[in-house]
Amino acid sequence: MPEPVSAEEMQTIQLSILRHFRDFCSKHQLRYYLAYGTLLGAIRHKGYIPWDDDIDLMMPRPDYLKFIELFSQTSQGSLEVVSIQNNPDYFATFGKIIDTRTIMYQEYGQIEKVDIGVYIDIFPMDGLPEDEQEAKKLYAKTNRWAKAYKLAIRKFTAKSGHPIKGILKSLISIPFRIIGSHFFITRLEAFGMANDYDKSTFVSCVTSDDRLSKRIRRTLLEDSELVEFEGEQHPAPSDWNKHLTDLYGDYMTPPPEDQKQEHFYTVFWK
Image 1 (cartoon, rainbow, N blue to C red):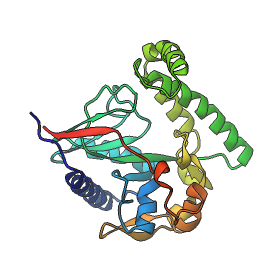
Image 2: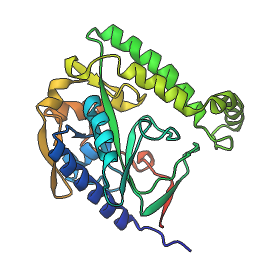
Image 3: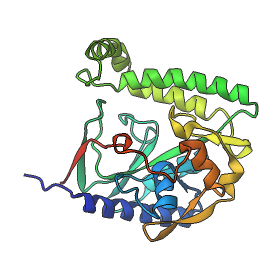
Image 4: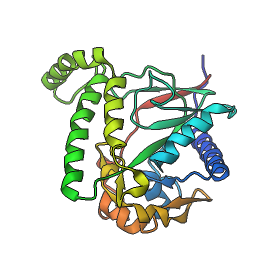
């Protein structure tokens, strides 16, 4: 029977991936920044949020595409990058760097067509229209495609808090699942890349419909500063206080127990 990967081993593997990624980006002069709870953890805890167990990064789209191309060209030991750019069966709008010595089974109610192991996530950041109303229109379009994408990756047996709604969603998802997630992801990415990142005043993860989609001034990323995460230094937006406040509000106050995010998966050594 496969040996399970402990929580401590998961963090050790993730930090090793992050270190390799940082050194690779430094070698090839690629930009990246801590994102989501990883940035929050760096500021509030100088490392992982105690109940969290993943690492999230953001990269400007030009660097993101270059990274996937370069990282895929040569052997990186046990590490492998997967994204829609290099694997048509991949199921997400962002990339992952995976440790192929491990295998992960996730229970998010979604279809996953490629094997994954312990990973870190990389979210591509795209440019936004200068006019805020035009940016909102862009979000409205991507949100519609994102809903279609989510139906395309929904398991027919996915659980729901409302059984009737769950049945209806499962039935509605059938044509979207037949079309396939690749179709919807490529449409999302086309909208995301419509505005040149390096010429935009504001940027965001356009292909995401969650909190990282909030816009941020590109100069806050260009003028990044190093922050500590688990004893090592990584770049973060220069005004990380404003960025985290925009994302989470009073981010220095931990949430109540019932609002702490849980991850549903099991991991084994191959």
